[in-house]
Image 1 (cartoon, rainbow, N blue to C red):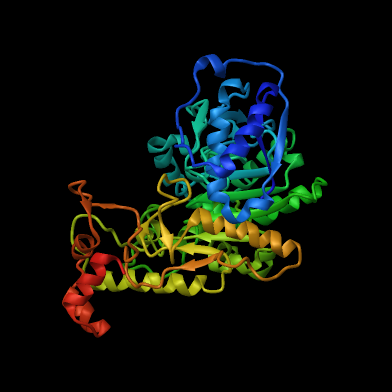
Image 2 (cartoon, rainbow, N blue to C red):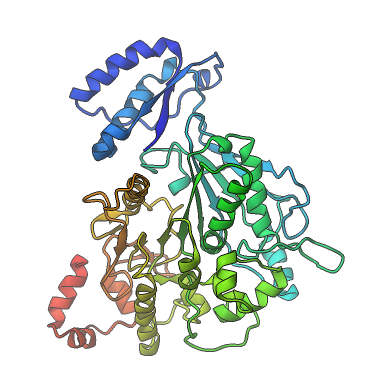
Length: 493
């Protein structure tokens, strides 16, 4: 688990030891969420800190973390450390690496002094692949192409949260959020020139952020988790090996680089209805990337480039690039991903779904399952959604009784065990989690669905009926009584 700084300030150490002894045998006090008063936040005394080694309490980590947090908060009045949950904006030292419009690229950072774990998150937000749709994107979504209006601070949510109850195993890491302003699925290496209206420098932005962070403590890191959602999730697959290779070239061979790709495992499948490639929404996935990679000057990892020479666009599709990646990567993917359905021309708004669309949606779940079956570390719930790891409900969704934070913790542990040459994964700690039920939202812990026309929440049966789900027909297909099928749906089994 590594070491965590716990509290600072000499006056508290004695009471801290006593408090810890009491807590071991005592009842859990109720957690307190209140932030400290300004009086304490503004104190700046010299402080000393000490670390705790957590390895001895791995088995009962959740309970232990609750106790540690209660203890730390009860001691807070005599602490001088500022509890600041916000990440702060930094622009890149190398000003030649820019957003699409030539404004400086940058990142948000919340340091965690004493922690040797770093989490870098790549933001998502689609892409553009020619002058027309990039011009349109610049008019309607300028923050995804320019840093001119970025706020000075950002509060992390989900896996970027600094609160243990929201982020049980990574709350204490150094958090880095890289805003997406290159529109190139984090792949481009082309500057803005008189000939190019826009810069596409996504892959270079990541490298420059890593170089800047080496002067801010990353040089002392033990683990660097490169994570991202949607286009950022695909960006992880394209950049996890290059980031590790960059650190090795710079002499930082002790930093273990890993990937966490959320909602970026797209399929190059046939669309439900074929349409001309006029904009980002209607264009088939393969066509977007074939055009985009040329327009962006996109680069792909060397091993994948060699595997698909002349057809490098293949490397943007998870199941094709994944076997070429050397570093460990954990895949998070909704089995019925809304962005995938959108590019496949299935639009789930208003009208009930026709039978052909319903079959297409079910087949998508089957296809996705097939591409994930050989991925050792992954979390794939049968839900209709998009993006996951920064959502506030990311602790609530379970696959086979295990939550995603728990699965990531198990993955951490299995990688530690592997590095000690113990090949068997920890008992009762699964990392390969995929729903086997066949339709969207058949998992009762899926996020709530709202009717897009009324905003009302829908239960599973309402949602399936809205989708044109025929209970009689489905029961017949499954060889069961319709009332039994309805009962199973209601209970979420």
